[in-house]
Length: 129
Image 1 (cartoon, rainbow, N blue to C red):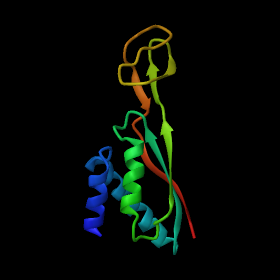
Image 2: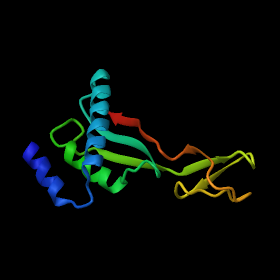
Image 3: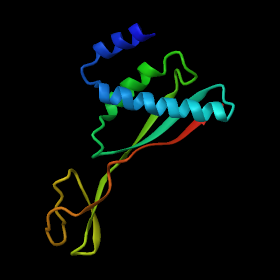
Image 4: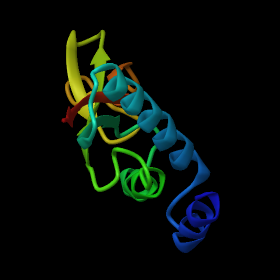
């Protein structure tokens, strides 16, 4: 199994060891919860991934296919919900979305703000049998 996994990793230039280890951790958590529930199969795993988390969703998808081989999650669906970056502007007393860390409040044009969302990386739910 290790050789197959390494072969699949070598096939993709988009997959990084970062996403592979993250996906392995998420799968381990899902498998543990499925075992505790007495499940024989995992049909779907749902993740929330913030746009500022540093994780590439496409690489996570590829990693998922690689790490689920031979497990009760083999052939399962991975659903990834993207979480936008939201910042809080204390000057305007309002929340706003931005595409990156260099956020500018659209109300007062102040730079920065308190990051309220966008760095999530969470296993939110799964469908089991």
